[in-house]
Amino acid sequence: MISGATRGTGLGGALSRHLLKAENDATVIPPRGLGSPALADQIREIVAQSAGGRTDRPIYHVFCSPDPAIADNAAVRARFWALFEAEMDMAGQPFCGVVHRKDGRLHEHRVYGLVRPSGGVVSLSWDYARREKCARIVEHEFGMAAVPSKHARTIAKRLQADGRHDVADWLVASGTTTSERPVARLTPRERLIGERTGIDLDAVRRATLAAWREAVDGPAFVMALRTRGLDLRQGRVGPVIVDGSGTTHLATRVIGAASRRFEGERIPAATVKVFLADLDLQGANDGSRDPAKAGGAGAVAPRDPGRPGAPGDGRVGVRRSGRDPGGPDGSRCGSDGGRTGVALARLQSASGARGAMIRRRLGGLDMSLGRHRAAVERASRATERLDAMAAAKRERAWALWGVTDIWGIPLQ
Image (cartoon, rainbow, N blue to C red):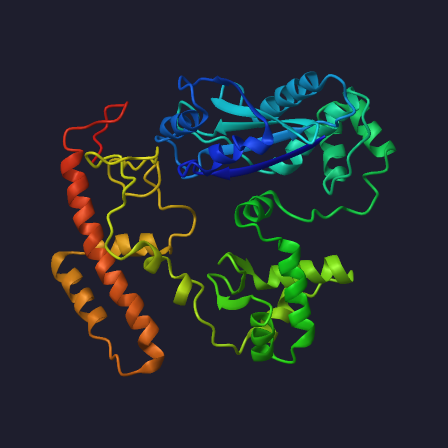
């Protein structure tokens, strides 16, 4: 049995579109704790129910795919979900989902809400190993062979602690606790990105590794990448490989995975960092891939459901009392408090005099210095976006005057 999971916001509609793709021959399953008939609306309903929780990623997308040799596929799936909900303490949590028939194989996707009625959030600590434990129990109970897992030894110990000695002994006898740990070619996130962009990550890895072996120094590496349709930019945590779709991949991870997959020995991240240390790289959002150019500076977000007559796509934008605007729970848009949007919001919240001083300083940078030109352009766009955000905030405040959420809290 194979399982996988990803966590997200559920705001953009991409998940429902993926689950309902025609090529997957999807059948929507009855939801739990939800009243909307359509899958996309059910996901939005889960997000709305999660507005009081302390998380900006309330959606947990899980799938299970039983071995096609099992005749009673439905029974296998039902047993897995029962074990999964007991393991993750998610009994009673709202969910929706679909069953896919693809290449003659039935598998089921479920979208769970992680926020409890109390406002607490379901713990997903070690969720991969915990899902694998559920899968091993199902395999044992239905007479299937144990699927190799890098967590096999940990799972066997946990099964012993839980009193499932029969499953633990079966797992040890299968040899998976002593075999070499398997390494997945793609993570679930990488697989979804590849489906969305149409670019094979292995092709990016091969081209990057070829450029690495060809180059004698950092600049030569950049040129070798560009001849292969790739580029090297500066990302948030280090240099990133930019593929033809504009998607970024951390350079140390791409080179390390490529060398291990195609040569059998991983190139350490420290080696890559030293090799690229002296490069002066553009930021990943500079130039043609700058999202500010694509969206246009100062444009008011059309998805804001608080705007009168806005089309809306289910995006939830609320603000809890005493909290800055952010995700559906009013949080700071994830663990990275240094994101551009958060930084702009902090600048915007400055006093009038301080805000005017900031704008004056941003607009007064010396344009004659060529090496600062890109920074000046970004600063100018940031100033325009500050003004646009202030105007949108005023418009939103008027639109939500006197409106409350389902708990009676004003949507300010």
